[in-house]
Length: 310
Length: 327
Image (cartoon, rainbow over all chains, first blue to last red; front, side):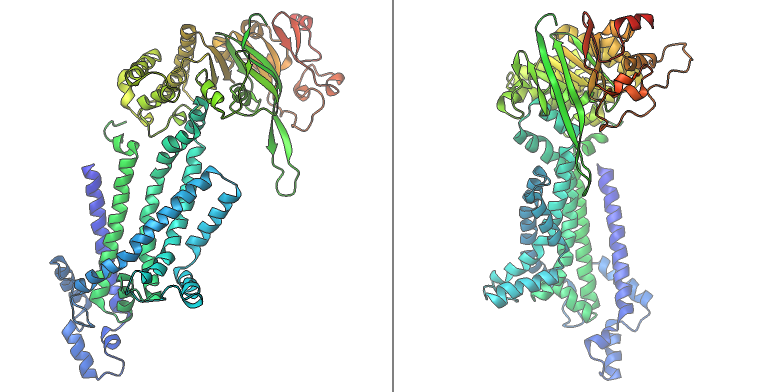
């Protein structure tokens, strides 16, 4: 178990390093921060003063070395736009993003899991088809389309909910409703397949033949076994949410991490973008590692395999 | 049939729909086509046939795990209750089944103990302590060490899995155990062990055993009574020793001749290699295209199972007791 965790940790730090390096170079090669922050017709003295101040006139390699050095000491640099520490800016946005992503995740699970299970228990019926149609629609509708449709219905036509901003909970409703369907759809489809797979197993047929009541078969045999592969999809759902939040926060001008990222990329605010990417990568790594650990806990086969080596 | 039968099946028919695709008409294939048989208490009834002969379907129909399209099954003098009814579920305690795939028949997330306990729990047998003792007794009965109780199916061998499956099936002391190809997933040495375990358990518990297999040697070793199935029908039935010593039906003859014998290097008849008649060729004897005895009359009417002499039935229009003596 300890070697299992150790290997994961090593792999995780390698991933982090790669993301850091790629983000650093791609950002710098894709645009000039001085031009983006000041303006195209800024005087050349102002531009070179800006570059000298942020160290942009040095060769890329030495910029990278000093960046890595400061990151390792916990300094993520300052925003070129308002001079505040990037980490502080990002930290301010995190709870705002969680305020919509966490409820969206819960809503996705609450909708997707039961829908998938019920669909699997009635395969081929009208109910099953409706659920699967809704699931496909859910995860294949781009969030900016869904967001705009929801705005059109609830803000423009009925005027029930605000179309943007973040002053009270009513502003969070549409972003959550936009984020939830993709996760719900993914989960519903996945759980349905996992359940169908388990239900077709010999031990389910045997359980029926033994006289085990159907309720008990579903609860004791089918669900726990179907839950194992389903756990892996949760990591994927979290990734979907992070990607979705960039778009959704921009659509609804929700001042979270996603919008911060979009704005910072546009203005080549290097330190902020890098800080956000670091956070996103860490979140993904943590999510996937927890999924792996959860997998090991849920599946006795994984847990015991090492204990009694075969 | 001497004595009251424990299980009696009359004219069982089960059709499976062969879907003709989007535009083709759906055709019904008869997996089981008018099977009647009787299993007496404590005996071993062997059901032999090639794959696709309908023997597994027959096994499931006998246990009431599937609805029959027509025909009836009675167990201990009463017809089987409707599938999934409370009475049906209660009856499971008295009739159990062992399936072909031993590891697949065990829930991968449950320990051996939990698997063995489950039938006791659902059929409300004993309290916690009694169940614990019963689980240990069951492990002893199938020759497994008690320390295996805490293991998961993945951690034991295929043969051990089959022992667990058998232990679970006899947990409720059933009157009838249907074993569907219980040996075919196992390697040869394990096969022999499981076969003798089944024989031993049956003698001790006194349950009736329906042994479904394509392995004639195993059937011969275990069975008192044998029925041979071909394309959904029983073509020959009788005392096991008698059938293997003097097969009457040409199909049975071919099967028996195909049993490998020690020191026998002769090419065996290739009778079974040609394709069986397709299911829609409904008239006449289904075996006639492969049959060395086929006569013109075989194409006209399908032979019915008829008694030739005491305890011996055969479904063939041509063969008689005398022709077999001559052969």
